[in-house]
Length: 359
Ligand code: NAD
Image (cartoon, rainbow, N blue to C red; front, side, top):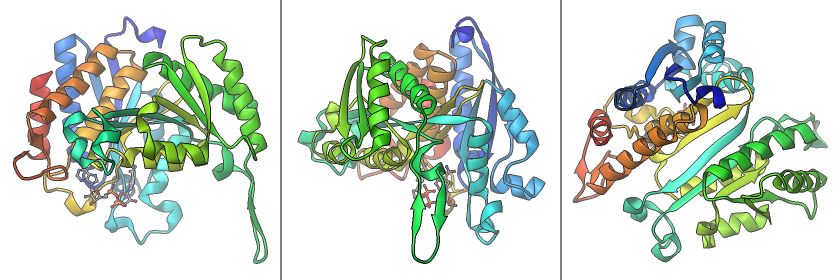
């Protein structure tokens, strides 16, 4: 990240995608432009095409042109893909396939899914107020390209298997990322495994302990995945960074995000060792509300904040976006997904304008 320390100009690949994708991305661009003006950076946006919009334009969910654009950008911001228009296409050409292809092409092996519950939105959580306290801030670091989903597979009518395998290299690189992230947060890392029954977990835990010795400022603990699933419900505040493998991470990141109760608020990032990382909201393209101007743009705006923090090393600027979101929510402004009687209901672009004004 060092090369960015003095850099003022950043190329951002923009993949708006389908459904509400274009509406929410436009608001994130609005916010990035405001950050540029306020802090003296130049963000250059270059548009690529992914998912249904790419099928309509090029006949495939991801074109070589878009792969090139993404690989050559400093970071990529993505809306969401998919919708009923493309539901009857063969599975290998569907919009969602573009998503898997772009992650693979960019070598993204580290998925970050923060689960943040702002104090003002405490009522949206399914958990009791005494468990939530003054809010939640958990970061799930999930290995994205190894393990069960990518191992050798076999199936006949009598038997089937999926091989769970991890190499030292795969574990080391995700573990280093998790420690770096924990260092920038509250300095607590809980590595989740199933060491009592899985050999991959034994190797995983040994490597986490080895690498942990280089990060003395980070406190490391280990937890079995079944216990982690319970602890997230009974004592979520003990978690700062959760590091885990692909399958466990898939399940735990969804569980953690639901503690916040609001799908329109959750950003995500996928990082690799290449030049560019990918930032996107955790939700889908919400075709049911597309084009109505009512989608919540906050997940995408917070994804842009993650881009500033993790790709460009611009923490002050990222903080400024996160604080602006907090202030707007404290003032009672809500898009439809979060609205309750007594709140101030706003549209997608009004929410973007309000956040921009607070920066
Ligand atoms: P979804 O996340 O799009 O929508 C689920 C529900 O949440 C809907 O009622 C929707 O209106 C609401 N919602 C989602 N985001 C919102 C926002 N920002 N503001 C307000 N409300 C919001 O999930 P789905 O309905 O299962 O899938 C719809 C399409 O999205 C499908 O084609 C699916 O394949 C695709 N999808 C894409 C991604 C992605 O691009 N990363 C992820 C999941 C689903």
